[in-house]
Length: 369
Image 1 (spheres, helix red, strand yellow):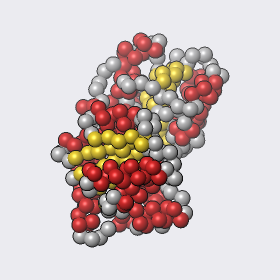
Image 2: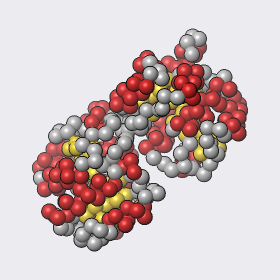
Image 3: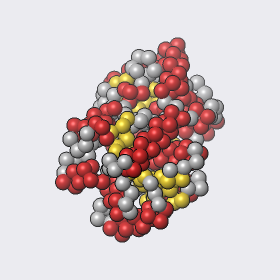
């Protein structure tokens, strides 16, 4: 298959990592991969490093007709058979460009839990341009169905997958030494972009309760984003001073997970967070909110602990349970590892994506799109 991925984000989040993994996996199976990315984006850099044909475009908004025209010409020259777009701007630009290039198989991949607005533009997009949607969890699929923009027959749920070999073990001791965290200090990690949806303020409030019970505890904040200064100011009011450590963006997330005793996921809006799969693979217990696809990843009380979103008190209790009950934490970790192996393998995800793309191309050949 000749497959083209389209994405308009500058930073590298979960959706962009999905493209990196899917593109690599499909290329390894002999498919021809191309990636259209935002100018100067990390996705563009990684795509080129992987050897995929790559085009960088401004994708400055829905009205960026220049990007549409250039992308359409690129699809036509490459004789693309299927286009997979993610993020609403990329979906509209990519799907329109695909149709202009006579590419009828257009798949959107959705990884966030807010459905598209019911509007004339989206009725046109889902009625005439997008032929199928991949949702990474049932919660996203259900939300999309409620809009009435497309039927269940045009939605497929394909959970994210992970390759355990890409989550190396070890490195935690060096991370603790680098960041000044004692080897035996209870360590909570929160990994993700510093944006509202990740609920860092709730994580800080929960940690304030934890550190009152465990004064030597530390919270490691991994990631960067537009709330950096605001969150640093918020953290400065939590005693003891310095108990919240901002590590910025780190390429060594597996080592961070090895260093941590528990990963806190306080998201207010999500899809299927990749960091949870990484933590489950690494054997680091998780306390997470019941947002979108998270309950489809973790069975509360078995693989980790689930709490309601926007509930710092509940999150604090969950963190304290894991930090103070080593036997229970170990059970969570072992159950989570087994679940990743059976339900969230990268090979299984690539199998299903490959099948979805092939089915769309076949449907076009039969005149069904």
